Length: 633
Image (cartoon, rainbow, N blue to C red; front, side, top):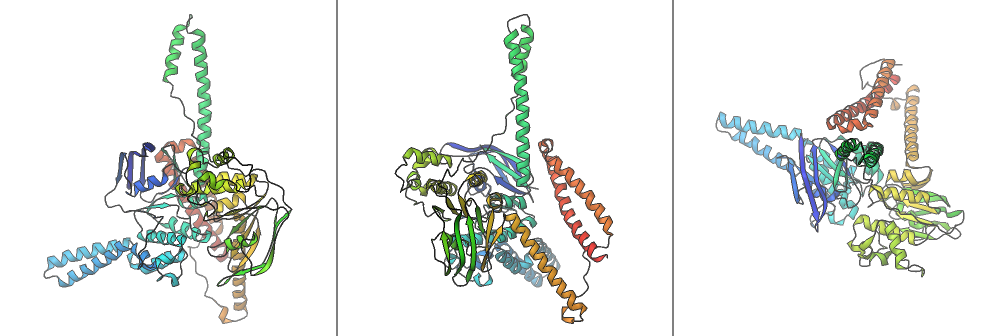
């Protein structure tokens, strides 16, 4: 079922078109990732879909009865609003449905004749079907599940909404939207204020929903887990690709390579025709030359892909520091409760160290202690020889809102800088032209982030310390930052919840969680494997203890015989089916990587649908196989 369709859709500001001629359809159950560089019009398109803005051109049709909701970034709460009342306001339609059902029940009991009773019964049954369809009988459970998943405790439920931090208020608005469960959910950067654990919960929750979604996000891990299609909005046009972010990037790269190859081949053909026309246009073969002129005029020139290029960025050459940049010994810190205790670490020159952990665990506090901006309760931190620190704060407070961008970035203590140098630096970070003379307060979130990074580069620091630097950057700017960090000859210490970013840049991780900080040698995927192995070892130890208790006759350790989740099947039969499914998946992956597949939209959808179906089947088969291995013996 088509929820929304657009024909020749266009929007402009101050006479300049943002996009024109957009054509698309959004179907029920599709989870679409909307990507594109900052300024491409992603937020504008989301507002059009939500009917919060109107197009100048074209037509946008929403199917009658379809409920569309947009995630609000700047909530406005009244003094009486509590966390629970705001969250439950997302269920207003279901609460109304419950009231209607109670009214229908009264009509049945008060009916004066069979005809009235029959009408009331039909209305009651219809309302009950709607209640069941929308899972309206589990309202309280759903509210608690979603608020808990987004990091709120039961003690927060009656707290005034205005008293929460900005990030918590954004999470509350996300909870409200999830509880609304509209037919089309519009999510603009839903993971921006979430830590990794909460983002993983949201990924799992959204992947289970049957509603349509359009998701704007720079979190490439998130897009890989959630979406089933990518829309790329660039230069006023939308290009659609089946699959998640990784699949989109593979298909886009293949498409660009194919078009480049075809364009080169066509150019050779054109050059041959032009050479023939020049050589024989006025001679005995003039007729043949005329034919070639007509053939040349009929050629449709192949357009190569319009590449999306991120800013150059780069942090330049810096003075060499000592080999040990920061040394922490027995460092402890607590507020209402311990954040970490007796933390030891040595950060070496040339390393990129990522800091990660849940919101409120103490990541930013540890960062500030390591660079001397905050005092530890116990222990000592030593900054190495010739270390110069540059700091990027999450709140971008180093950029005064009323100051021009060029002045906000200009190094105060370096007389050698001139305006031309500062503007050139800003240009490298994607802030060119008149943007340099705008005030900081006039910039978008992404532009402020780039200005803060330019200011960091201007310091000439050989220890770059960054607190959530990717929060407002588009995907291509994130990639530029990742490349700049990898090429930087100094040392980097960075707090981030962006798993893709941490995988791209981190040599080591400091994980702050559950009242302690520990060092992991490797990137996020290394940490993920480590935690999975630790969980498996803990489970094995617990199972071993239970088995030992059972053998020793200790009834307190006994458990009932495990029941089968799947019907009995021989292990070799399951292994044979797994092999067949994996073979078909590999074939489909190859097909999805071929340009011919995505040229045919219907074929691409069918191929993607079969691929998703088989991936789910393979996961079930592996569960079945593991059960068979355990229980058939």
